[in-house]
Length: 103
Image 1 (spheres, one colour):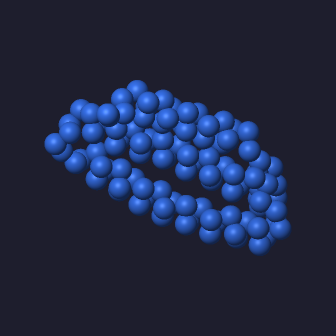
Image 2 (tube, rainbow, N blue to C red; image 1 turned 135 degrees about the vertical axis):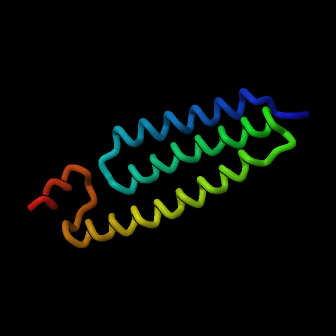
């Protein structure tokens, strides 16, 4: 029994829109970062699913997904380093307080 493509796409859509909702509504920088990661993971799921169902004998979609995961990990490391520096300066990681860094 094989899981249909639509179920994977629904999962990707739910993850994507949960990430967009979190990105728009969250005030904490860590929560915003997690929301961005949700969006990237939803895209990675779609890459793998389309590759599996459209070109089952080829692995380009999987390699692209692995590359995207590696880029997302590097992006997360850089973002956490930036958030740590913001916390050291402001003792807070709320998005609304980032205007204080302009001074």
